[in-house]
Image: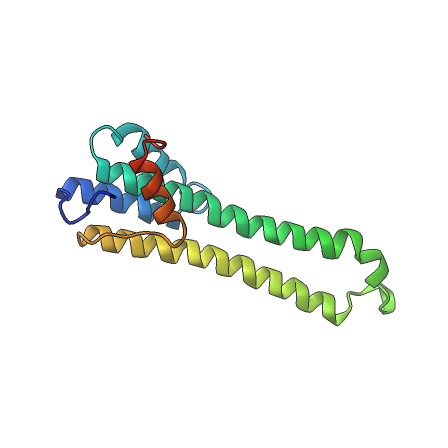
Length: 150
């Protein structure tokens, strides 16, 4: 069973909220929950749970978004570029431009989702309500209970 945020002190809720809210800091957001987890994991089970959950979320979702983008760019521009550049004056065909736009929109959507979920976690923990990230939250809760994440 995961630690309840409703029974946590105001200080515990504030640290948990800071860990979630760090998602607003691009590229540096993972440092905050990592620091909170390292320094406070023995003090509070609630803070430990929220910090590790935020850390995993802020590492996995942006990394997956970036990987999909890089694979898409490599696939479209690396291997297919020479075959598809048949337009006049070496311009990109319309289909390639549309695929590039879709990839950029996907990356922006992934970052937006990272920030939105972080803000949701921040607001819910400040209010004393429990918060689980989709897919990650239950996994973290089960591994904390088994003592695999300490």
